[in-house]
Amino acid sequence: MGFKSKKTTYEPLVSDEARFSQSSDSLESQEDKPMLRRRFQRTSSRFVSWAKTGGTVLAVINTILLVAIVAILSLYQHEKECSEIQCAAKTSYYSPLLEEDSGAIEYEVRRFQGALEHTSVYKGAPNKELDAAWEALTHMNNSGVSGEVIDRIGKSRVAVKYPDSQGGQYDVGIEVFHHMHCLNIIRQYTYKEYYSRPENRPMSFTDSEPVIRAHLDHCIEMLREALLCHGDVGIITYNWVKPWGIYPDFSTQHKCRKLDKIVAWADKNALPAEDPEPDENTVWLPGPPQ
Image (cartoon, rainbow, N blue to C red; front, side, top):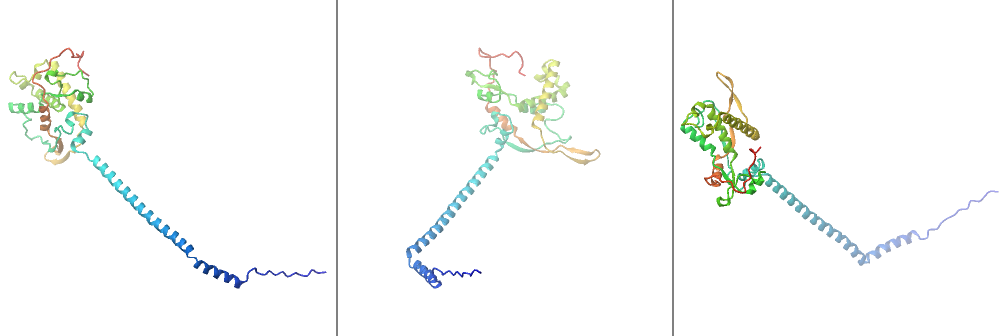
């Protein structure tokens, strides 16, 4: 016995006509509700307003950041570009002559006259004019500085000091003048016969021969130290010159500190003509400082 297939049909709950009618009614009903429409429009307008405000704020922030970056870079560049005296102070050990208001440091471009045949008031056989020129370079009068300067150069305050009645300053010399003194005594020793005569004898040559020799060796060592410390990196070129062939050109350009400015500082800060006298506060060292 076979089973009879049961045909099942499902009737839609809502007819197509009714659904269409409901859909149309729904749209029409929404159109008839201005409150809902306004709410949607208001939300959209608020979003656009916020977007515009956010864009403006972002633009302002970016502008502020850009201005800040430019200002920082400008400040950095300004600090990077130092004046001549500031650059000199950065590349030198402390000296009161390197203070901004000292007036002691001024540069000039100078061409060294290195030719063997070049004549100079500082070159050649000794004479009175030449000796006077070298004496001016040595400028051995000392200057006075405060105790704070002594501290900053790493020296002890047991150094020679004038009493308060004479200003109370410490007795100091300037290195360049000592270097000139050293070079001068070496120059003089190369003309020993001339400078050994009583009428031409410098104070340095009144010592015994062993002391003079020690003085010369000290000066050679000080000049060696100074030349290597400053380490001149100027460039020397060469030319073909008859009859020698390759020949060095020692007439080179250099940027130099003006000596007259340093002399002016030394004179401005000159000490009394008479030497200070030791007193009850004087500390005597057992030997020369090392």
